[in-house]
Every structure is written in C-alpha cells, then in structure tokens.
Image (cartoon, rainbow, N blue to C red):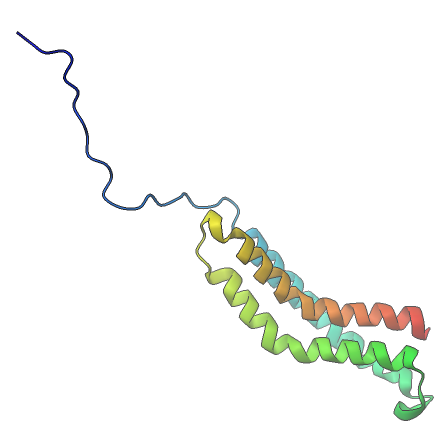
Length: 130
C-alpha cells in the first residue's frame, strides 16, 4: 500500500540569498564622469577669463559683486582634484546591488558639485558683477 499523504521536504538553500543586480547601475557614474569632466574644463576656461574682470579696479578695490563669485569659482576648482576623483571612484566601485543605489547616486552628485560650484560662480559673476 502506498502512502500518498507523505510530503518530501527539500532542504533550504545553504547561504544568504543574494539580490539581483540593479538595472542601469552604470547611469549615475557615467553621467557624473562626463558632467564633472565638462564642468571642470568649462570652469577652468571661465575662471581664466573671469579673472580679467578685476583688471580695471585691481584686486583690492573691486566690489564684492565681482570678488565673491570669483572666490566661489576658485574654491570650486581648488576642491575638484580632491573631491571629484574620490567620489567618482566610490560611485564606480560600490557593489552593483539595489541596496547601494542611493549611495552610488550620492557619490555621483558629490563628484559633480565642485564643477557646478565653479559654473555657478560664473553665473553669479555675470548676474551681480555685470
């Protein structure tokens, strides 16, 4: 006689279940790499010409409408070699799992911030100093 009510139990998997890779994880690091490159190049080009805004008044006698944006641009470009590479490496090296998506995006945003600061200083210079 055959017992049809007997159930066969299968063993549970022997390790933690690894979540699947997050789709499009490469988008944030690629965008940050491209944007930081172009923003930094544009910021260096712009600060080279924007420094000529102080030629007529000298660096000590210029209004704060000119010197503050120039300082903002300079600080953004001074921070670029320290912040941008570390943030980009972090964005690229983080594990490509779903739980690290937010950290990867934050690192990508941090990588772009110094370049945005330099370009924002130029926009401020054109608005206030012009």
